[in-house]
Length: 225
Ligand SMILES: Nc1ncnc2c1ncn2[C@@H]1O[C@H](COP(=O)(O)OP(=O)(O)OP(=O)(O)O)[C@@H](O)[C@H]1O
Picture 1: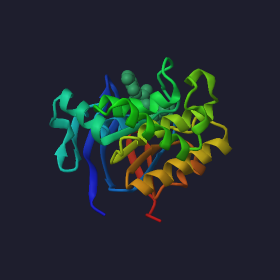
Picture 2: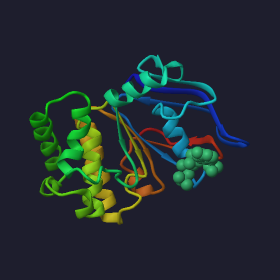
Picture 3: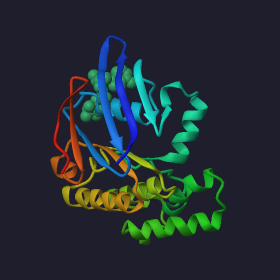
Picture 4: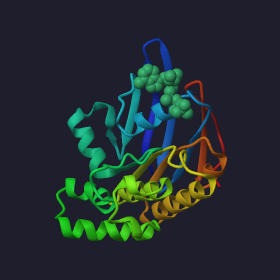
């Protein structure tokens, strides 16, 4: 598999606090990579640098041959919208929209018409075992259902990389594993790579590969399974 995303010697500090130090990481097309490590070790900072949300102080991040660190903010956000999907610990759904409208939103922002966007959103909700919540607002559904909606929203644009930061962190273990399984299966079917930050070994077990971050450095690499 070819490298889709490649971080080379990236460093990032917040004031005097080094969050990442000389980190190298390659994510190949279609690969699911779990980033593990203790609290405060730099996992989220690494994910944000890889996704072009945070610009590292040093080093480069290349996506599909393009140097993300050299792009303007506008170009990076356009690239994020068209190529990447995001899932966070707490779904971050838009409370005023129905769940189906939330899933359709990225398509609408990319210029898709309402009806086809909502049809596609419903198909994704069905796939994520959440078809019955399409008409409900996020405040009316359970945490597990809201995360299924968030995963559907991340996948609806057929992204090449899904970034998931503790996507199961707020769920009980049964729901968490099911959501991870659905995310992993959908990503494998669509060929999307996944960069997954998690504390939970049982969630990381769905990845093809695990990397461990400690004190801002990648400490060890488990061999690919
Ligand atoms: N916006 C920020 N401003 C200042 N310091 C920050 C900021 N974001 C992160 N840090 C610091 O950078 C270091 C790495 O934080 P990061 O959030 O990347 O760790 P993490 O491994 O994701 O932690 P957790 O598992 O608790 O979410 C920590 O020392 C943290 O306090």
